[in-house]
Amino acid sequence: MQLKKRPNILFLMTDQQRADTFSCVNPEIRTPNLDQLIQDSVYFNEAYCANPSCVPSRAAIMTGKFPSECECPTYITMLPEHEKTFMSRLQEAGYYTAVVGKQHFAGSGIERGYDEENIIDGHSAHAPYEYVKSYHDYLAQHGIDPKTVMAGGLISGGSWQVAEEHHLDYFIGELGKAWLTKRAEQQDEQPWFFTLSFPGPHHPYDCEGTRYAEGYELEQLRKPATSYEDLDQKPGHFKEMGSYANIYLNNFSEEAFLRTKRSYYANMTLIDEKIGEVIRILKETGQYDNTLIIYTSDHGDFMGDFGLVEKLQCLTDSLMRVPLFVKPPVAGFKGVRVDDPVTNIDIAATCLRAAEAEVPARLSNYPYNGYWDASEELKVRDHVYMEAGEIKGVVKDGIKTIHYMNREYGELYDLKLDPLERVNLWDEPDYAEHKLEGTRLILNNMYRAIPKWDTLWNYKTPNV
Image (spheres, helix red, strand yellow):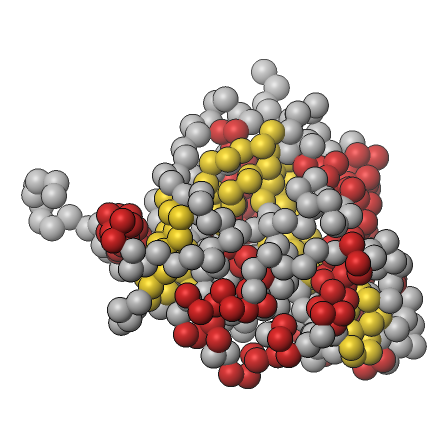
C-alpha cells in the first residue's frame, strides 16, 4: 500500500496588516493574487491575534501558546530558551525547515527550529545593519545608499526614491521565489516547511511614489468612520501616548493621512504581486496541490480609526482582528468562508496535525484541519481570548469584555450593535451579566499561564 505523502507547508506572513486589506472584502484596495488564493482557501471572517504587538504576538504563533503562557507578554520581553517553537517540532517530525524575512525573536537564545534561515527583522532600509544584513548588502551591490531610498512627507515614512525592485518587501519576495525554485529543482522527497515573512505593510509607510500607489486616487479613499472624539469613552491611555503622539491624525492634514493610507495600501499591492509570483512557481513546479499554505499577520493597524495611525497597547479590533486563511493540500479545493471565532496561535497545531505529529498538551489545540479533512476532529472555540500586557480580553457571542489589572474601569462592547466599538458599556447595568461572564472567562484563561495549574491536589482526590 502506498503511504500518503505528507504536505509541504508554506507559511506566508505580513506585519501589521489589517483584516480588511483584501479587495474581496474591501474594494478600496487591490490584491488580485491574494483574492485568487483565497478562492482556494478556508477564509476566516473572525480571526484574531493574541497580542497587538509584534514580539509577543509572534512568540504566541511560534509556540502555540498565549504570550503570558510562553513568558513573552510584551514588546520588551523575549521567549525563554526552555520554550520550543513549532518549527523545531516539525524538524523532529522529519521536515526540512527554512525562513526568509521577519521573525522578531528579539534577542532570544531559543532554538528557532530552522535548517536554513535568512532573517530580516527591520522594516526599511533605514533599519540598523544588524537587523537587515542581507538587504543592506544587496543595496550596496547595486550602489544604493540606504539613507537615500525614502524621503519624508507622511505621518510615518515617505515617498520611495529609487526603483521599486529595491524595496525591502520586493527583495524578500524575490528571495522567496528563489528558495522555492531551488527546492523544486532538488527534487528532494523530504517534506518542507518554509516561512516567507514580509516586514510590510508595517510603518514606516514608504510606497508613495511607486507604481503600486499609482492606481489609488486620494479622493476615492474613504475617511475613517470613527474619530478622535470617540476615544472619550475609552481608558485614558488612548489619549496619553507620550512619545507616540505623532500617531494622532489631528496633528496632520487630511491629505497627509490619505497619502499615508495610500502608501499602506500600495505596500499590500506590492506584497500581493510577489505572492502571486510565488504561487505561480508552486503551480509550475507541480507543488501547489500538495502544499498547505497558511496566511496571516501578527496584528493590525489603526490606519485612521479613532483618529490614530499605527498601534498602541489596547485590544481594539483594528489591531486584534487579523487576516487568516488556509489553502489546504487538496487538489481542486473550493474555497469557503467561515464565521467561527479563531485565533492565529493555532497555526502551530494546524501545521503539526498536517505533519502527522503530536500536538503537546500545553499547546493551544484548535487546529483548522477539520475544515477540509473529514478525518480530523473539528474543535470550535466558544470565545476568543487576547492579551496586551496587564490588559486581558475576551470576545464571546459578539460581546467584547476587556479587564484592566488594578483599575476600576474597563471596556465592554456589543459588537453586533456597535461593530466600530464606539460605545463603551462597561458601567451599563443591562450588560452586568455579560461583564461577569467575560471576566470569568478571562480568569480561566489567565490560570493557564500559571505553571502546573492543572496538577492534581493529591492522589485519588475527586475532581473539583
